[in-house]
Amino acid sequence: MFIDNILSTARRNLTIQTRAYPVHFFVGELMSCFFTVLSSFFIYSIVFKGKVSDSFIRFSGTSDYMSYAILGSFMYLFVVRTFLNVSRSFITEMREGTLDSLLISPVSYMGYLSGNMLEQTLVTTGELLAAIIITSPFGLKMPDINAAAALLCIGITLVSLFGMAIILCGIMIYLKDTYLSQNTVFSVMYLICGITFPVQYLPNWVQNISNLIPVTYSLRIFRSSILAGSSIASQAGDFLMLAVLSIIYFAAGVLLINRIMKKAPERQFI
Amino acid sequence: MLIAKGLKKNYTSKVKTGFLKSTTKKVEAVRGLDLTIEPGSIVGLLGLNGAGKTTTIKMLSTLLEPDEGSCAIDGLDLVKDAFQIKHMVNMIAGGERMVYWRLTARENLEYFGRLYSIPKEELKSRIESLIRFVGLQERSEEAVEKYSKGMKQRLQIARGLINDPKYLFMDEPTLGLDAPIARDLRRFTKSLAKEQGKGILLTSHYISEIEELCDYVYIIDRGLKIMEGTPKEIASIVANCTNKYKIKLNVLPDKLRGQFETFMSTVQSEFQLEEVDGGIEIDVSSHKDIQSELISMLSQQSKIISFTAMEPKLEDAIITLSEVKNYEQVHA
Ligand SMILES: Nc1ncnc2c1ncn2[C@@H]1O[C@H](COP(=O)(O)OP(=O)(O)OP(=O)(O)O)[C@@H](O)[C@H]1O
Ligand SMILES: [Mg+2]
Image 1 (spheres, each protein chain N blue to C red):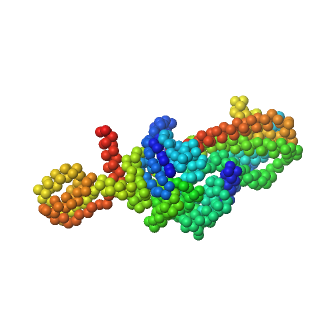
Image 2: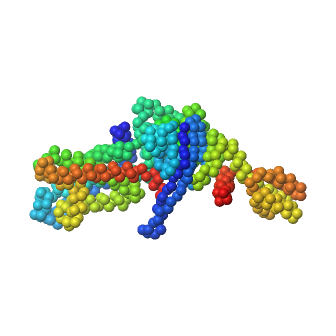
């Protein structure tokens, strides 16, 4: 039942995306990934003349700024794509006039959303492979990777992204807005979660906010596992925080979406 | 059997009063509606724009939760047993929405079918027969966005039948369809009720459609039921509510004019006079059938060039009925 909802929704999305897949969107995402890395490269080679400061090494635990930036852009690709598409799913149904036929059926909200997440994770994994190739000229170096820690990090990160996406999905339905909500969220995350520079450079009060966003922990663990080979045990604190935040966001998302979707049909034409 | 009692639904919406200011506005869309649908029968729901037809249908199809009142469908409660009820009901609305434009007809039906957890083999054969039923065999592998309006509408009908609902709610299903397709749809609706024993609720703006299809009719106005009965009863009341005549005379002498005006006021009817080429045109609108009286009075002192009795309009009848209802309420 629930599984059927997930699989059929994932399959439906895959059909839509592969049929009328907006190629320019795919290319656009990869380009933005490329340019994020490219701009980091310029800052690194022109502003810092190829030398990172001691504070960067202290904060990030690596002196390889380019690998640091590339991994940040990979994570951001995942954040944007899964977050964006899952959170927009219900409001897209609303705009395209299919929300009624969906909600009239015995669909499970979470089954439906999980299907969207599953499909988007698969597609983004494909995009990630392309991104790895595109950014290869900048030389990602993984001298000492701890694969177990990196994989566990990705797993929990997906749960946290899903939880946040569900919350944003509810907010979008409530505000009937996609543009403002999603752009605010993405700009804020780009700036304060440590995508291109360590969060320690930010003012303390901003860091406090960063510490409430799971992506901050994900990035730290991801880089440390790949660049410095840190083990799960040695990052237990960060893993714990990431897991706790994921559970909180996920639970909040489930509670919120059930309440908001119940009222969604009557908010449709306001 | 579907039995609804005292259904009520209010909408609250925000009304902008300034850049950042807004107040909430309450609309009482449905104000205590009783309604019964028996399996195998077609029930009509008539009303002017904004009467609350769509709201009623959305409540019955579990999309909106009623604020007050209750509804039992084959003994199940509309709100508490919503999940089971979803398997027993479906809705078809006029227009081209409610299906995925980027999927093919078959993919649409597959997706919706799986949401209803219909077993694979059964779903497959049901999709085949539905596609044939709505005549989309040749285009079933094409994306819906390439369909014409009528084809999209037909696919929507197939979607509404995918779970083989026992009760089907149709909200202006012939909206925007060509006459022949609308006729097909009416025939088809009839067979769903009479041959497959489905209980159907149908809204429409067309009295002829209602007369042709429905076994029983409810007329609602601003969320309240103002009348119910068989289409025959409704039609005769409609006919009685709004008699309109268009008369052309060659002359209207003062004496006849006086006589005519007195008669009009005794039967409480309205009229308009207009001098036209070669005579005088009179438009009469009356709550009573005064055709023979008019003819005999006018033909005595003038020559009637033409006399047309206009077909009664449902809209006029509803307006009249609701005026009467308001009057009764105020003077009760
Ligand atoms: N989502 C909504 N939010 C606020 N008010 C609404 C909403 N939907 C409908 N209304 C209001 O509720 C009343 C009843 O609307 P409804 O759509 O049920 O009428 P209807 O009989 O279907 O009309 P029509 O013949 O135009 O389709 C109207 O006054 C309408 O403006
Ligand atoms: Mg309507």
